[in-house]
Length: 113
Length: 115
Image 1 (cartoon, rainbow over the protein chains, first blue to last red):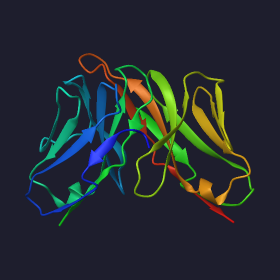
Image 2 (image 1 turned 120 degrees about the horizontal axis):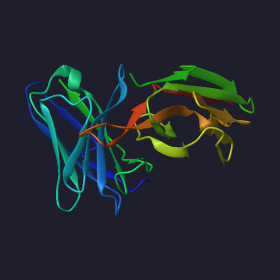
Image 3 (image 1 turned 90 degrees about the horizontal axis):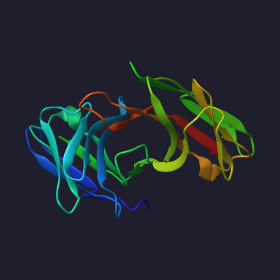
Image 4 (image 1 turned 180 degrees about the horizontal axis):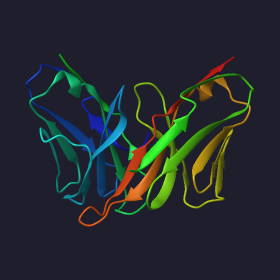
C-alpha cells in the first residue's frame, strides 16, 4: 500500500459525458501527478500540481482539467468523453517538487461506452 | 526528443533462471532513473532509484545498475511471484515556466516466471 488513494476504482460512462476522478496523496506529500495508461500508449504524464498550484502539463487534452485543493487532494475532470479516453488513470504523489520518488495510487479504470 | 526504450517486450523464464531487463534512454538532463513493478490492473510499485552512472541498488532477487546510456534490472533465481510488468522511467526537468520534474516511462517488459 503506497498510501495514495484514488476513487472510484471503476467508472463506466457514455460518450459525451463528464466524470471526476479523485486522488488523496500520501500524508505530508505536497505534489500530485496525474497519468493516463492505455494499452497502446503506456503511461503518459498528464499534469502536476504542487501545493495547490499547477506546475507542469504533459499530454493533457483541452477537454481534461485538474485542480488541487487546500487539503491537498486533487481531482481530474474529464469532459466530452470519447471512446478513446477509456484507460487507467493513476495519480502519484511526492513530498516536494524535486527529484524525489513518486508513489502511485491504485488507479481508476474508466470505460467509455 | 526524450525517449525511453525497454527490451525485451516480454520475457519468459523458468523458476531459477536468471536474466536481465534493459532500459535505454536518450534524454537531455537526466535527474534520476526509476524502476517500478506493475501487476495487472494495479498501480506501479516503486522498486529503485538510480541517480548516477555506476550506481547499483539491490532488493531481494533484484539488482538495478545504471550507465550513462542505459540501466539493467538483473533478476537472480526468479520465482513465479516475480511475474509482473517492469517499468523503467527517467526523470527530467522542464525548462522555462515548466520547472517540474517529469517521469517519462518506457513501455515495460512483461515478465512471466514459470514454476
